Image 1: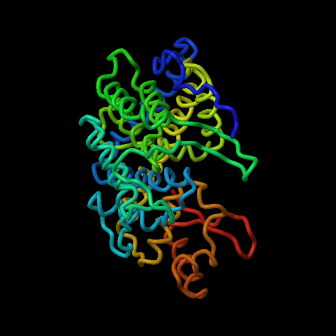
Image 2 (image 1 turned 180 degrees about the vertical axis):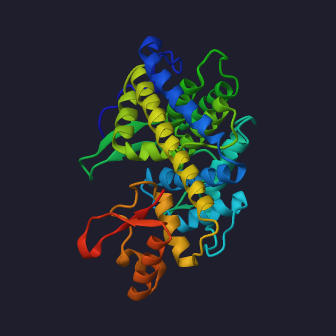
Image 3 (image 1 turned 60 degrees about the vertical axis):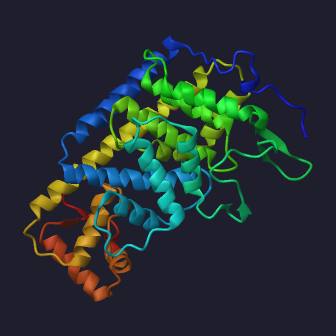
Length: 373
């Protein structure tokens, strides 16, 4: 085992974080602008479309916050759980899994109840919901309580070649450390910018690593809660977890570098604000896609289409302009709708005739079709 290093939580003034306000100012402005565009775009949606957009973001959040930890959830199980929680139609979807339901419970509680205090009891409930069977993979873990006395370390490499990436505060300090974090979170200074506060909350909680498992997912739920408090919105309108997944390698790199540094966390906040801007920008496009989809179906509300055609069109519409690589062709239509080649060819031709689809002009005999927006 390598010689212990000085971690951020061992600094004499921990947890009195500092940062370069002037350096963050332009990044904060850009993040706020992107955030404002999303909030403005959502106001253009009617309640049904807003709920549809929120559901899509929640599904993405559930899938990606788990994927960051290397856990691949069944997308249909996540969609089923989200539909049940939001009261959306769930016909044809499988029954939600307990662990997936627990994750969606956590994500919704963090945002819908963002105005309620974050307490140790609430955190324990969240962590227990992530592991309803009391297991992480094949290993039994403590659920609904703080981790045990064994050191909490993040280690990589084989036996004899271990590399310690992070060591969390020891168990004997954890109760007091968690109490201090929760007190700060519930009574943060009024002059602290909400986005900066969300970034600090994420870093602080990850540093404590209070549970045997689930710390990353809970840190991102707390971040979502802080963002909801900042926006005064009981729903997430962009997925920060999806953006973090896209930057997973740099996420773990900046966290490790920050953990090994002093209490100036400017570099971490630069990274965090950059991801907020990127996530909000992507969501703005997502809301635009939702509006475009609504306009499409309004235009074709009287067009005679069967369920297979509607399913194929919805897949194309959900992907957005250019999002369904190569468009849809006969082979893809067959796979998607479980129909024969002759039927697929006939129904695609019918969609072209009804001005729902148009040929992409690429691919020769296997030419694809794209939505006529």
